[in-house]
Length: 104
Image (cartoon, rainbow, N blue to C red; front, side, top):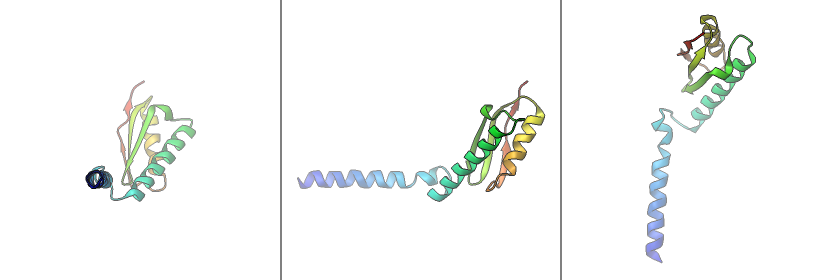
């Protein structure tokens, strides 16, 4: 019985150590930063979907430490530029990397 407890404890310790570093592996400092980044991504995506000039469904939004990366496709250079402006004007955004590809 003591062996099973020791094995279970060792496994739980290993799992705890392995998962506690997950945020650091993504380049984030803590869970709070991850939650903030998700909120920023959600806010940018909602604004893109709300705006009639941008195709929000064809634009992917990812945020890491306040830096927003836009990827996907835009129908014109104007749409690409507008998506970048929308992202830049969203609360909490420090930088925007507009990787949208213009494809008519």
